[in-house]
Image 1 (tube, one colour):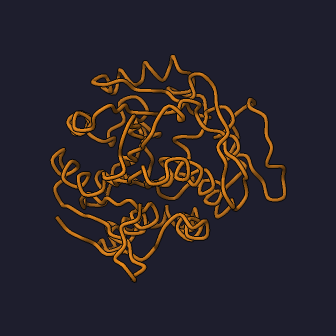
Image 2 (tube, rainbow, N blue to C red):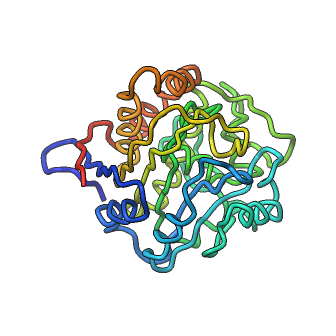
Length: 305
């Protein structure tokens, strides 16, 4: 399912300045033709009391429009408020994600999904419950990230669907020339960085995109864009960028490329910190990595609603 004009290699990305539940729903209706059956809404639910996570009331209203849907998450690789399923469920309550079922997909272990023609991996370990769904909506708070440079749709599923004990270890612990086969366990480490980290994430995201092929769509919310991820919780830096709007597409590469492009058009004073975070981590390499994996198209047209 690709939204491309016949004969032209350009993907449609829908945009609205309407930062609200209504804005989310309006865009979703433009990209939801493949969303059927049991629907996973992949959301970063955040560490306790994080100030920048998507507003619960928006997500509640949005989720109510999607029949047979659940929010899905996985446990973290680092020890914190979402390390175990029990801790994770307590954090979900604190953050107000109580209006629908939240499926912690690796609660019952992990499952390997193939990475077709992966840059590094041939398979990736995902939360086992991923196989319980027919479709996925990737609902992303676009912002900076300490390791990825920025977190868009790709990072949301790359890290967010990978299992907390093995999948995330594979992404974060791979070193050049090292074995791709790993065993779960051990203390969280961060050996992978820079362009290589963007490639291990891209492989992981490809596994999820391929699994839901034709039944996955992507929404990026460009609001409260701190240089820090929602995994930083209360320690996240105060955003300096203005809020921009919401972008949506069935093309993961196009929606992340369009998001980066919109952010980079901000005045230098607003952009400086986030641009520095993105570029010092080689975060822009996420885009050519996905392109090389044939996950989508970096050429797009904006259709404003």
